[in-house]
Image 1 (cartoon, rainbow, N blue to C red):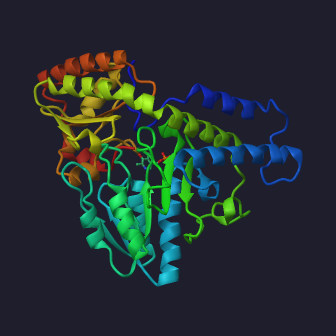
Image 2: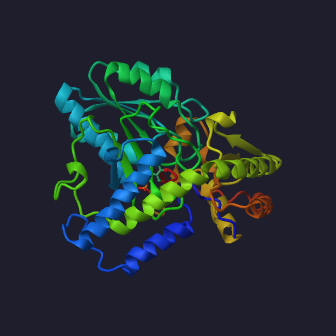
Length: 398
Ligand code: PLP
């Protein structure tokens, strides 16, 4: 049963599972509260600090810049709202810049600030391949811009953005810069010694860690307002008892994904090519996203399939044993049209995202190709599986 939906979530790595089990089984004695002074508390705290060191080593940042969150969504919200509020207060700046390809964790956080906090929002449109033109982003920046947020790589098309060009210019203008790197980390090196970003979001479940834990890199010295108030953990930016087991597991996932990234990419590149070429060999299949491999994640293969409904295709593929995402996927059970694909002028109705990851094999790819060919032929023979428009609502793939 091939699973080609690594962009949605990935299988947990054995070393991560072992770490979780060790903490949850409490094999080494009582798991304390990481803020407690006694030995049990200090064991938990040590695990958190070791994880912090691992994340910092993988990203080439200072451990003090690393804040643990409950996932990518919280990391994005903390960065977008936290940096925008702090910059707005300091500089009386109330303008935000994002792009039309952001994940809802950024897009909706920025929209919320505009609707509820009186901020002004500029949403920069992408190129047709899903990448964002740095010049267009920089042209949107004003003297009162509090924050710019541009994702490192898009979750649907895998389109990679030029963070250096954007960040370098923003540094010169003193404007805070956040990037959602949730999709990028598994296959792209993120070297914060070189990348001029003030904040960055990761989510452990996208690279073999558990769901429900993530990282917000928030450079010390860049003012940030906390979203959560309470015990003052994580330099007062993210209150709440340290989730020692999840954080330790996140640290192990980050370290292993980072250490094995080059080998993973070398293994996945020919598999992704094999998958894309096999799909393009079918009638009426087009590839979406950047054509230059340098501009797209090796993990993502996004295609449009003529003559079938994308959602019907995804369900039929699932029944046939192939797990992938429609170009538009569901967060609430309804069928969605992806705003990202719409912004790129791609017909989301007939789109399919197949995404590879650390467990993907050649057999997965070959089985997937055979399944897609058979299911598409069958659906087309039965009229494509189109559903009437009223069932549709706005949404996007995770
Ligand atoms: N940002 C991007 C680009 C994503 O793909 C996702 C998950 O789909 C998120 C943020 C949210 O991460 P999480 O699922 O950990 O909340």
